[in-house]
Length: 347
Length: 165
Image 1 (cartoon, one colour):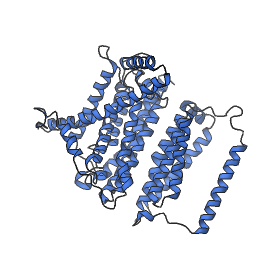
Image 2: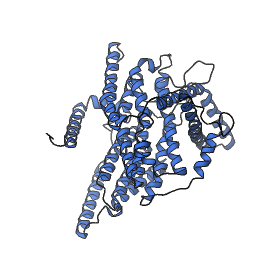
Image 3: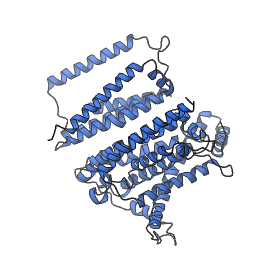
């Protein structure tokens, strides 16, 4: 395996800890804990940076200035102010709520959102969980995020939350199928479900966005729909169902929903980077993980751009679009990929 | 890592017991999901990640959501007693059936020579599994696909309701 900056650092650290303790199991454990801590750090950093970034991007698109009061001319301390506000808020538990489920919902929602980060190849060899069936396992885990929404919607004892919960289920299930099918073409070309193999298959400079442009469009639309962001945020629909499943949550419980949402946003961007934009590959003057970061942040910007450009769709429109346009197109893409591979004699 | 296997098995057992003993039917359904997830984790701990992923995706990802949604749709006024208790005779019959099933399963597991001889299915890898499905087991695979398609069409027909004209 090629040794990159990050995996080299991990190897060095493992060696140092081994020299210090003399127990291989301890150095492995320490390294795993460091990896998990790093991923949690990335997720919380992303949430902090993206709340600020989203406001600035939104302001830029709407020809406004955005946050500029707390922390200098550019409002750089705005996320800190937001956090303080959230932490000082009163924790209100709605009457008649199913208290245990209600408290569990935001916590459980964060688990799959954070768990999928273990599969991302941030650099050559820098994967926490290197699994052969990586792609499949990743989507199996991210699919677990549907039920906590429904739990929260049900437990809030509020009809708007309930409707929101049902909307989450119908939307996320509808868009999971095209999301997976859009990646099948790539899996056919690489012949592997390991994420690092998929990245390495693009090392010739021919990224999959050029080989599979239709799949990229389908993937991006479905991924935005999966994160429940505008133009697909009718799950929250402030003007119709008052934030749906989150209606009754306040303070830090609400912040957990928010954290999961931004973790999912970064996940969508990272997946697009890994599958279509060559992951950590790039010219040698920068290390791989820097390229990875640049591409991921660029994709986050594109998704934010969507949010502030397109109006919200209607619930029947979004479901019809998912089943009658996205799914057939993604299956067509699989078929076309197969035909071309046969014609080129690759099978 | 044998201890992990026992922990995950315990999770599934707690889920199964919670499902049976809970008085709130929504809680029962969610305990069932816990049981599904415990099973998936058990598969991971015995080095069958593909099977575990399938378990997660199909059972706790799709089947569980269907069950929970169906239950929430028929919501009763007071959910805390929504799973009604049965009469004593019914309980005894149920316990008897469960015991019989347990004995049957135990016997068949005890009488099967597990681990002896070559396993017919070496398929822990997804690629091996796919190869088997499309060659040796192609006919059963297609039959199951047709069965599922028929079930799906039936569900669609039921959901659309009768002729409205």
